[in-house]
Image (tube, rainbow, N blue to C red; front, side, top):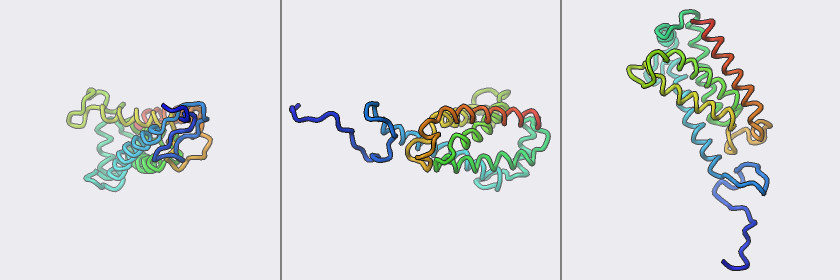
Length: 191
């Protein structure tokens, strides 16, 4: 080490300029933004694809009518067509918003509500996925959405300058309450 080395300079990276807005005295986590982007892309693409299956029958999906019939097999007996539309739109819209990082806490709350209902509906089939009965996959989707509620979208997103991006916890807690309320309302009104 030479005496001319200056350790007070911030490290630079390929993502400089899009890293978080932390003050100079706190450690930088340049990988955090990239990790949240990967999480958002995986969750958003998966849920969005499910929405396309449920709404339009794409990717070998059942479409609205088939999805309504499938919901009946999981114990939903009232308003299954309406529930199919709401679920499909939430999956597709929430997936797109999560991918681009816009209104992330609310979009993740919608996805969490859908995934929580799927876990509830499949809970009797055991944990492991087997002939569509286990809930391990839906639990992973729910955990991913729950994580985004409290972390926000990260610095690589469209909501870079929003208040909830800089302080995601308050809106995350409100969004969690909304997701829980929506899941309970769906279970009570449609089962």
